[in-house]
Length: 99
Length: 464
Image 1 (spheres, chains in turn yellow, green):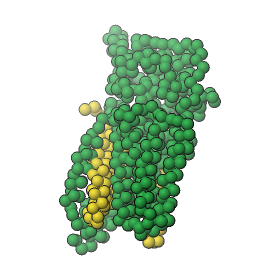
Image 2 (cartoon, chains in turn cyan, purple):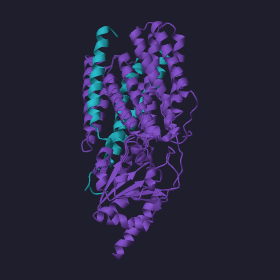
Image 3 (tube, helix red, strand yellow):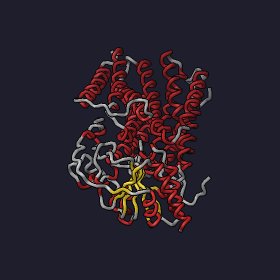
Image 4 (cartoon, chains in turn purple, cyan):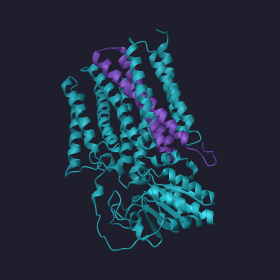
């Protein structure tokens, strides 16, 4: 990573952190559990780094570690989205007919 | 493979980053929240599909196996019961951090010994935060699942020992930044981070879990952002920053709600304040009431606020509570729920449990909404909550929970507390609420007692 990349990355990090604070501050405490499971699923985007690492096959070590990392992150992607949606489906306003 | 695939990948990443931000924005209201999940899913699918176009990938077989295996593990983890959501969340923090730590480790061995100082710094940050989150989250999940003993284990000088261990990991990191050729030190750095994660959670008890899970969430996010710096992936930096910000906000909320300073929480010194005074057992009398009396008071009320705590979830009483809500609402009583931020085992846990029991979400009030309501409330019914209703937090400067924000249930005309016995709660702190003139104690199991109130209510309806 050269200097320009580093500065760019820092900009991205700082701006994203600000957006994160502003957006997440507005999430009602009602939905803090789904918030955590959703951000957890989004965080598992780390899977893209693992895919490149495992796919490039540079060394045996990097391939093995990358493959395990894909399994771990994918389980978060799949499980995180499923449970978030399950929870959100349960939140109903008054007057909704019960199944 | 495909000409211009680099550009296609970059475009999918940018679109994914935008969708992730919208995903969280839509989560601000229950009405748009599911759209938020969809946006996140589309962003994730795009980014993964884009990555698979990367021309440096030489072998797809293992990628496919790993993706399918991850999905197979993920489906049951997405379908756990709602009471198990806290341990599932802790486990997923561990998985996320595991991914980050493994990728960081692989990158280290691919690049060492030619690593720039800045790169080595963020790589160290990535694997130290990642490593401690892996073991810390596994410990937290084990305690929540009750595989590990839940009692906090504390000893003299614990904070000093913990900080010394962390300092050792950071010391190695600094040495590696200056001398990346000392590759033999790398496993020690990761190993110490893993040990530190365990030591961090050893002194934590059940009621501190909301804070701990939020904090581990923040660590997981920051380690992922650090991984973004290492791989020069802007998308990963964005996702990590969003996750880190979320964990940070929740940690601050939880530490405020537990009356701990944030620095206290950051240094993992929680779990220790609890050991203070359980003293002064005066002979004060508490009044108790039967289910019949409780039912007649409730049915005569105009406005009832139910305050649930983790005890309600332990007793699996939420469905009975829903029936009570239905029965009272049918009689024209205005029933709402007042929920303290640390009720349950993770932020927002109680809301999920009540939503699962089909309580409409507009009846669920957080502490700021609920407190102005109590003076106009006829009955505050407390089920399985204790310390979060303790008026000593407002008045008694000597109380260990003095200053902690509480639900002002004592301001309601009548307070009813369903409780097994007069034993103090988790923190071992006496609750003067139980001796107030307007308080009635309803002794019994939460589920059973709510059930008998319900029987009285339906019986009374038949006569009247």
